[in-house]
Image (cartoon, rainbow, N blue to C red):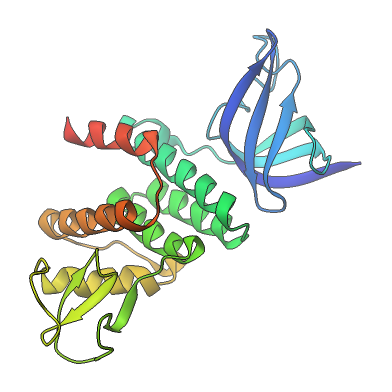
Length: 243
C-alpha cells in the first residue's frame, strides 16, 4: 500500500550508480530511510525532486523500521529564496542537522513542526538568525536542558533580575550576582520572548545587530555548556557568516 507523507530530505547516500538512500524527516513517521531507485539517472523524472532539502509530499511504499521505497514526490514549497542564497542554505543545513539530533534524543512530533515553521519563516524573508535562535531555544526542552526564565535560578526571586547567565542556566538577581556577565536588558527580555513565543505568530522583528549578536553568543555558550552537541553544519554556517 502506498502512503503519502510530508517531509524534508535531510541527507542522502549514493546507492549504486543511479540510486540513493534518503533520510527524510517526516511529519507522520519521524526520520525514515527511503530508497530512491534510479533517481540519480539523468532521464529520471524524480532526479530534480529528490535533491537534499526537498520539502514535499512523498508517495512511498512504507516499511516500518526498514527502508521504504519511493514512488513519487509532490513539491510543497520549492524554498527558492533559501536555495538561491549560500548564507540561507547554511542556516537551512544547520537547522535540519540540529532538528535531527534533537529528534534522536526525544521522538516528539512537535520537533518536525517547529523545524518546518522555522524554515518557512526564513523562506518568507524573516531574519534567519532570529528564527534560528528561536528554534535553538525551543529545542532545549526536548534535550532536557531548558532555561529558567521566570525567576532567579539561584534563589527563586522574581524581582530585581540583573542578568541571564549561560553557566548558571537562567536569570540571576542582584542579590545572587557575583561576577556573571551583565547582559543587555533588551537581550534578557528578548530571550524570554524567543523561548515562549508561538513560532507561527512571529512576524518581522526589528532587532539591532548588536542585540541579535549578543543573544546568539549567549545561546552558543549555553549549547556548548549543556547540550554536548557538536555539529559541523554550525561550523560551516559560522564560516559563511564571518566572510
